[in-house]
Each structure stands twice: as structure tokens, then as C-alpha cells.
Image 1 (spheres, chains in turn orange, purple):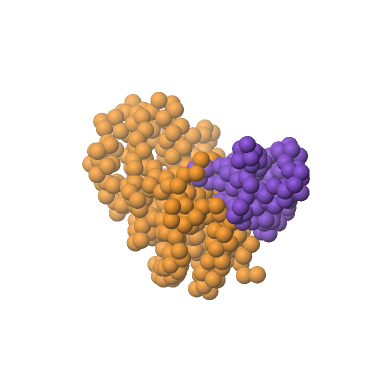
Image 2 (image 1 turned 60 degrees about the horizontal axis):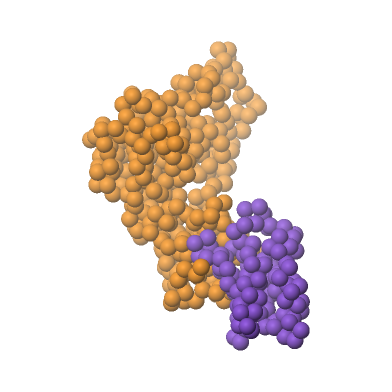
Amino acid sequence: MRKVYLDHAATTPLREEVLEVMLPYFSQHFGNPSSIHWYGREIRKVVEAAREQAKALLGGSSGSIYFTSGGTESDNIAILGAAEALAKKGNHIITSAVEHHAVLDACKSLEKKGYELTVLPVNQHGLVSPDSLAAAITDKTVLVTIMHANNEVGTIQPIKELAAVARQHGVLFHSDGVQAVGQIPVNLDELGVDMYTISGHKIYGPKGVGALYIRKGVKVRPLYHGGAQEEKVRPGTENVAGIVGLARALELAVEEQRSLADTLLPLREKMIKGLTALPDVTLNGHTSLRLPNNVNISVDRVEGESLILSLDMAGIAVSSGSACTSGELEPSHVLMAMGLDHQTAHGSLRMTMGRSTSEQDIDYVLDVVPGIIERLRAMSPLKGEGGKQNVQ
Amino acid sequence: MYSEKVMDHFQNPRNVGEIKDADGIGEVGNVRCGDIMKLYIKVGKDETIEDIKFQTFGCGAAIATSSIITELVKGKTLSEAVTISNKDVAEALDGLPPVKMHCSNLAADALRAAVEDYNKKKA
């Protein structure tokens, strides 16, 4: 059976070129970069070279890269760390309704501690408006955190404009760029962000490693306490092989971003056109301000998990915003924030392409999906036209 | 995460469809949580379930529980059928993931609703 992996927003395979540069740092070059002797000094150079390389690749000339265990930790250090460091200045933080849980739940944990939290709404395409941000900032606001590109629907936020609004008001701006890097051009100086999160395994690098860019002068309180590693922002012996792998993966992702986008854009359009031509199938997200690898549709009268299971049996790996797949009772907060009703959100399907995706893969998906939808709809008590009423 | 039995019933659901002249119809769940089950029963002599069909909007567990309950109760008397619990249904499928036990395990409720509907119509 044909196997088609369309869940690259969940994770990507480690590239051979990345694995190759990582391998010597597990056993051969094992030194602790904090050691003064030769074994350590040799590794220190490698870690610092990776840091400088990552910084240059992201165009963040006015700050530093801090290596972490991944996107979630980077987001938590940025949000909890900056809010606590600025506690004397104010207690108001602003985020958006479509953030990843690593951001949303970190913000909510501050709210429980007594911080004021504003969650900005999005429009039907998932976009945050810079005007709504400007209106939400008060003299108590210390931090704004808004993602660069959304993990579910692929909507690309106007980060440059949003960061400019924050800067005008003297408020720190953090962005989670986990899904953006490698998909769209990222230049941190141009974006004007104070902090930026990236992750290794979303860019064909290793799992368990990520980074946080912090502009010079921005103070964050660490989450952990221990050694002086990463300037105490993230104590703990460095994940050297992971760091080396992250830098190499980032290098390849940045180098190949344009050619990957050129390959994926026509495939994305073909898939969107083919799927939305089916009866009662709609596109979620924005038509153009969208990651080149993202397709997200809602299939009316069908539940998302049953779609995933059926596609899985056909060898196609995808994900959904249905409640069943989130481990919660409510469907995707992203789709709900965009104004979808429950049924439409439960019937969502996310397909995220990657380097290995071919036109034959898309043809196969377009070949298989109609039959699956037909089969599940035939089983559904909901009927077309008027079938959407909320049956209690 | 699902047992082979769940996947079998999801892939090859038994007794899918609608009974046009059903004697009882039971519908449970709502679109808010993403599961709606509708069971149709045809009651024969001695109050036995002569035919049963289902229509379900929902996840794999919702479809599998709907399917297996049709097998469990077909040919049983109504009084026997209503003693089947949601837990019995889950056990007949070799178990369900914990998170599914409450949200998608509604087939026994749907059956009881169908029997109630039948009793109401008869009265």
C-alpha cells in the first residue's frame, strides 16, 4: 500500500545530512562544554559556532540564541520569564486566540497567578489585527506574544506590523516561529521582534532541541535553576548533538526555503482545488496568507477522527482539529476562534506537506478522499442542507 | 489506541442505515461534543428485536459501539436488551481508550432511548 505522510506540522523526519553531523557528538566528542580541559574546550567551540550560525541564519543581529529542549520550553521561558522579570513594571500580557497551547497555557498560568490576560480575537481567516493589539495595550502591559504562523490552519500573521505596535508602546514582543521557519522567509531584525521561538524537529532536525532568540537588553527570569549554561537563561548541560543538529537543520531549512515553497505551493493549490470541489467541503484559513505546506478543510456531516482513521487505513497520515484528537471535549480552539460551528470544527482535517511530498501523493489523496467521505456520510444521521441543526 | 475489534467494527460496521417504518427510534449525543447516534428498532412478536439499524456521526469509538450493539441485541427481547450497559458494550469491543469511555460510549443509552420511544408509541 502507498504510504503518504501529510503531517509535517506535527513532526518531520531527521535529514541524513543532519544525522551525519550529530553522530560524532554522542560518543566520540563527548566532552562537557563547561569543562576547562581540552575535551570541554573543543565542544564549547562547537556549541558557540552553532549559536552564531543560528543567529546569522535567523537574521537576529541584535540579540543572542539560547538553546532549549524545544518549542514548548522556549515559549515558556519567553512568556513566564519576561513577565516575571517585568513584574514591577506591570502585570498585563496580551496573546491571541489561535496560539499553540505552549503559549496559551503559559499565559493562562500567569493569569492564575494574578496577571491580567487579554486574548485577542482573530477574523474568519485566523488573522490578528494590529489595530486590535494597539487598542488592547495599557500602561500595565509588559508582554505581547503572537505566533508567526499557525500550526493548524497555516495563517501567517502580520508580525512586522504587530511587533511595531508593541514597540511604539514600549512593550516586549515575542513570537512563536516554530511553524514559520523553513516555510517562509524569517529575518528577526526585519520583523522587529524581541524574542522568537524555534524548534528542531519541525525543520528536519532532532526532537528535544529548540532555541529562543532574545534581543540584547531583554531580561528573562529562568524557569530552572542550576548552572551558568546559556547565560543562566536555561541552565543544564547542553544537548550538544541536538544543538549541532539544530544548527545544521536550520542552515538547510533557510537555504532551501524558497525552493521548497516553490515546490509545495502548486501542490497545495492542487489539493485545495481538488478537495473543495467535493460537495460540502470548505477550506479553513486564509487563501494567500498561508504556509505553503498547509491544507486545512472541513468536511460537513463527518467527524474528524473517523476521517483520520479511514485515511490511515489507506496509508495516508493526517491530523484533525476534532475533539477526539485533542484529548479534550471541545474541538480545536483555533477553528472555534475563527468562528466555525462545532460540527464544522469536529469535521476538520489538516494535511501538511513536506520535502518528500510528490504530485503523485496529492493525486492519491484526491483519489481516495471522495470515497471515504461518501462512506462516512452514508453512515451519518446528519443530512445535507439543514442537517447542521444542533441535535440535542 | 483502538483494539482490533473496534477497528473491525469501524471498518466493517454491521447494520448501518435507517429503518423507514421503525417501531422505535433512539437518538443521543450532540454535535457540540462531536457524537450523534441514532438507533432504529423493529420489534417483532414476544417483544423481540427483529431488526436494528444505526446511523452515527462521530469518531471511531462512536461508530464501533453503535455497530456492536446492533449485534448484541438483535433477536433479544426488549427487557433483555435494556439491561446492556455502556460498559458491556465497551467490553464487547475488548475495551475502549479511557478518554472515549464517557464521550463516545453512548450506544446502550441510544438503545434504551429507542425502547422508550417504542413503549411511548405503543401506549
